[in-house]
Image (tube, helix red, strand yellow):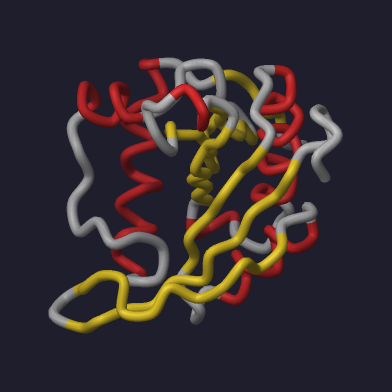
Length: 164
């Protein structure tokens, strides 16, 4: 059974390990190294950070970062979700995303956005399952290992504001 709880600083080494697994795939992020805790902590909202626990071990995590510091975008956040390679395909991401959406709405987030490499069809499918829609493709938005890469831009509107 998977339990979803608030992430704490004590979870950082497991979060970092799972993030590094995602980086190694070349399909999860433009990042090529994992930041130190202080940088990661500063870049992510403290109210929307979760870990998935199975058998007392962190097997996945999800967090939101601010899209912009401008007050007009206070309800818009970028999503990050990573699952330990040995636990993929076991509904960990599904449980994390469902809980993160609920938590985001409790904190007045009206739009969640995700930028996903087109090759990461599992992540695109997971996001679609939870109400995200494809807004478009940002072509050659960044380079990873010397190669231009596209991202599929997805978003999910909450119904908390009636703008759905």
